[in-house]
Length: 133
Image (cartoon, helix red, strand yellow):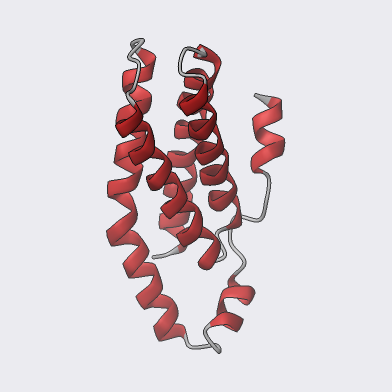
């Protein structure tokens, strides 16, 4: 777990950096937040559903793994674009874990890691929702 914590460390949100990206326009900031709040839950749900299946010993097929990798990649990009650095780092860790699973599907360590990262990702999302109000 310590290894995962080090991997995902980072600033939760850098508002000054994001405001700089949008030339200080608070309205654009709100539009970006609204877009994030409407789009991300679907991707989060995909990852959580897979993590739940992994808890019961389910083994994903390559199609599901690719869908999960894509969901993590989307979360990563959206998070970094909005300067949610910690969330981006978590999604990046999930993306690389899924890539590793694609080549070593029987490694239960990857499934356990994904379950932990999913919990951390959802906790981080709850914190960001408070920030985006």
